[in-house]
Length: 297
Image 1 (cartoon, rainbow, N blue to C red):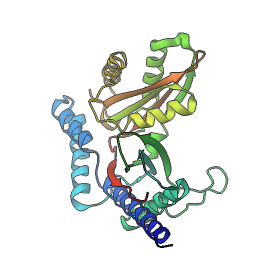
Image 2: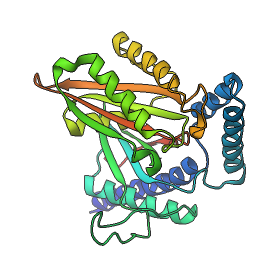
Image 3: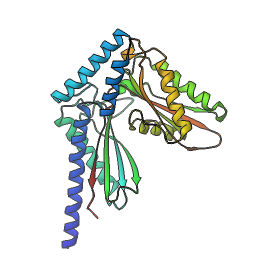
Image 4: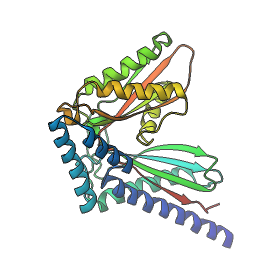
């Protein structure tokens, strides 16, 4: 009986810790942008030759600095909360309990951080705001390298950019050129709507569901990182150059910097298909992570 009570207490402790960590990450992520994104914005502001584009970038940078200093949201759209859980080997926690702990953390974080609640329960008919920004979108992944640990990543995604995301089922014969054209057309059609300079996540392969999740996962990679496969790495670089030649520029005012980075992830697919997903992020790419120890087992 004593061992059972001890185990129950340990489970309660890990649930409480997950909730507290998620709440903190919701606030932390929304009060600024990722460090590598901020550094990329500083870099292109120095390189940009168009005066209006430079001034626009200066205002964007100033806005981020104020948000970080004053502890306020960097954007009024504090997003739908996507939570990536990387679960290490040996972690013992029930999936429904883990989900509940994450959602409670989102509720607490958005309340304590005075973050806008943007989630409606019925997407088509009632569209009543839940008032909590829950439920979160939770992505479960498993890792052999994180022994008895859980890595929690909170990724708030605003819908100005999310609405510009696209997916397509190409035929295999369309190949690299078909993929390239689809991505460029998606960015062209998006124009100023996703608040450029943007970051473009691309997922290739799997099914329609897989390619869109891969595209979202690609956004978690740092600016300037390259796919380990040299062919995909070259495609990332070429697409970045081509997108920046479109002349959309910061906030759509023109200039030579429309995109900060293109990240591609891929997965095996069926012989008859070539699924491609494009997930666009605005300059306010917000993300925060923490690794916690799981001692419930």
